[in-house]
Image (cartoon, rainbow, N blue to C red; front, side, top):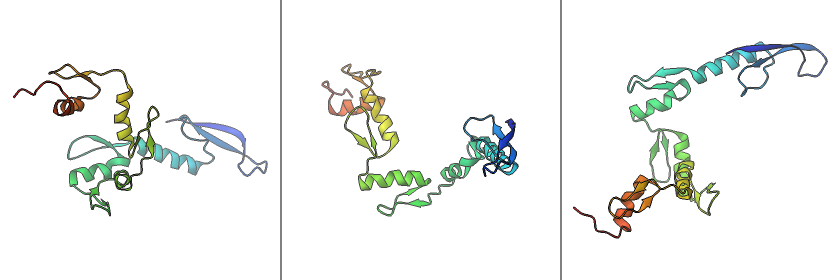
Length: 164
């Protein structure tokens, strides 16, 4: 990471005093005004990219995600649904789960009238709007958008009997 220096910039107070400001080469950060901000920025940037090897599965995990990752191996589920008492490893997973109980569906499909309680449900749904249907029923030849849909198709709407 390189920090670029710009001199002769006005202070943020607007009092005419000139002081140096610094710009990081990473475009996702604003101009940094002093050395403390630079130090904080550098530490944050380094920890965002720093990875630790998990002793359980040997995957490299971002430092910022490591505690959540360990919960999977340790079986810890500290976030409790007060409605059905299901537990989750992450707060965001609990929030998405609670929407199932409340019926809240904040993620609408932009191509039809359906709405979904999670972004993953919405993303899974999007394939129905794609013309490509790569999964073929081996019995009747019906084309489907999802592999899991083949099994459902076989149980519910395939016109030919399942051979055992």
